[in-house]
Length: 176
Image 1 (cartoon, rainbow, N blue to C red):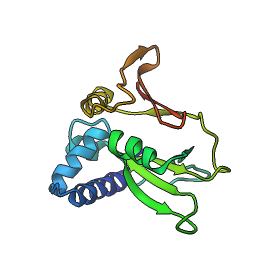
Image 2: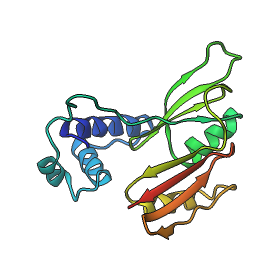
Image 3: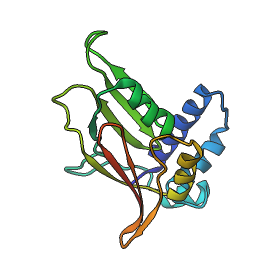
Image 4: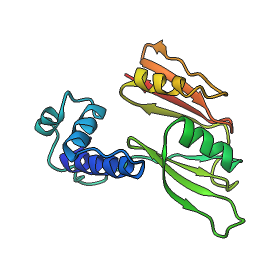
């Protein structure tokens, strides 16, 4: 569960990311957007409901960060950054000519993409709970990506939209 502290951190990260793309917004506008992403009507509602802190007691796990195998850096960047709209958190190579390990993020979903053969197997499926799936589908369709036009299918467990990356991995977005 999110806390007020983590929601404020998300708003700060959103402002920073947008500023890097020459889209300035106020802190209050960022808080409103984060509240909506978390499923609340507005920031006042979110701040009334969210706990002050999400400090775990005892054993607790943070969000898992899946590692997906990639084979072509340019295709990975085209799919994950240009099409899906992720931002780069970090890039790592042991040397300039060695395989890439890339951390990406979008709206709290973190993924690691790796060209290292031992890190992951191609053909993975990720199940990603989310909000506002129709808006995301519309955003993706508007980009007119040549290798996919995802649709939404209603399942007993929610609205599902699947996308396939160029390396055989599938991301199954679901709004419950």
